[in-house]
Image (cartoon, rainbow, N blue to C red):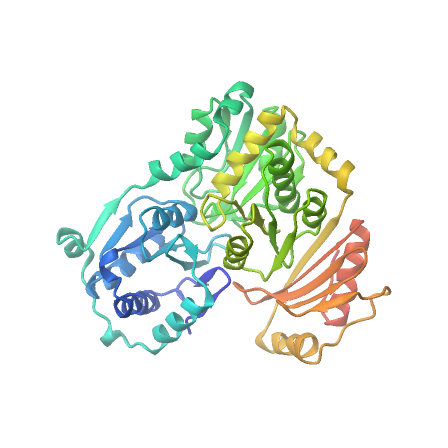
Length: 473
């Protein structure tokens, strides 16, 4: 069955991610557009470097063209945020990127976007998934790709310049040119390299690159920037005496950072640092939006500057909606995705990376010094994050315990409140813990944040034992 989660539709290649299912999704999208009368306004599709991504974009386009929808086909592997920007910039009603983002290499998928370059909400993806599941192959009209191209139903486009120019227009390029930092890039075998190098070379940075070849298996690692996958980048930053190490995930919508000392900087710290920089050093105003599993240090910074922090469910579409509703300045999540007011409504690793380079250049402070400045003013919070693969029955059991019976373990401290907005989140005076099911994989995730790492891990250990999950620290 085709099911859209928090980050689009993702399945294992050859299992759920098949030519037949891709065609079903495309047909459901095309028919929705025809019912809305927007089929002549066009549809933009792009793809990343994963196995079958280009082929899947072609199969999708063949159905769209066969159903009478004109297609703009980005004919080079491209970052997901570039596709979102193109949908927004060309005022198109819908678009898509073929990607499974940071999932393992055996996965692929499709992210859908709506007008304005936004992640499609459940109100859009739910009916599309239902209609797709009800379709038989005999109902689907297909126009061969070459025919669609020759007859004008599919046209090749290269929107890269417009996208990169929009980022550079928002970044203080002069401050970067004056500082000329040395940066090491790790695209993690994904699609960010050309865009980031263009921005950084234009700003006269010195740039070194690792892991840049096309490898659909991502070097045998998960294409997600985290402490375990960025050891090569840590070593390279130290070897090159660089000011910053930047990594992006497979489709470049989220990033990971290494400071000038070769130390991993958490996505939570990156989000809080950028918010702090925009408020204090640039003098901008506005609230912050974070998902329910992201650091509350963001709340402390917001409060200090007379702003507020809005909590939303996991899924960047909720962050985008929260930013619109509150005219927020920044929105982000603990997995490394963020965006800033005035850019696209989705997360963008290239824009976030460029803003970080601006930050260390304009302040003339290394990243580690800015982190100390932040901690000195707002204290420290530490997050523990763990996840477990689940069978269908184990998921049912955990859901019954937490969400239906609403049972909790004894945490050894007073509970201030419990939220079931997205999973089960328990708030304490000094921190919090949440258990929720992944929206992209059959897993349960537990996050906890406290003033020390040991206390955060202890909270996770307690919840894991209560749910009968094997805990390895």
